[in-house]
Amino acid sequence: MKRFLLFSLVIVALAFGTSAFAATNSATLTVTGTIDSSISMTVESAGGTTSGTGTAAATSALGSISKYGSAPTGFTLARGASNWTLSSTVGVQVDKANLTSTDYTLTAQLGSAPASGVTWKLNGSTLSDSAATTLTSTGTYGSTGSYSWDIVVADSAAAAAIDNTINFTATSN
Image (cartoon, rainbow, N blue to C red; front, side, top):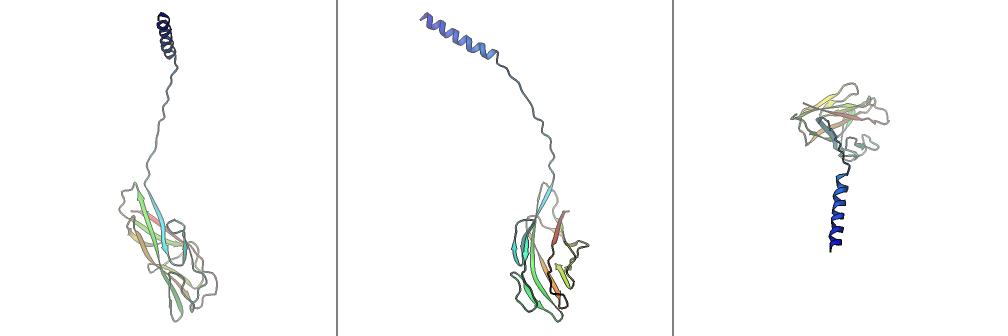
């Protein structure tokens, strides 16, 4: 029994002895950062065969269009005496984070000059590639604004591609 007691004391002494010599250290991580306010914009809908809705880079394919043909998907076609108009809508949604602004201004501008004899309009305003057109100055965050979209083609326009890009810009107020 003495041996067992002596053996137990040696084990306890060794256990305390090794922990008394354990090395320790510490480190710190200082974190700095600033929360920036931000807005996000997505194209939610558009006439034509549209892909990429719900993103900031949607594409609308109209296919071959003509005054006496059928309107592309999601468009109506109105024939005038000297021109014809394709009409649809574009849905744009702007969301915000960490921002006290209650509304935003939305503008649109063409990415390049329109084909000769072709006029692009949003909400009745003619778009150009040289200046932005204001669509709304009181846009509501978190809801999809719907904007009328017209492509007016003169009967004198050459048979050619009308490809273009509509660049939307949202600015918090």
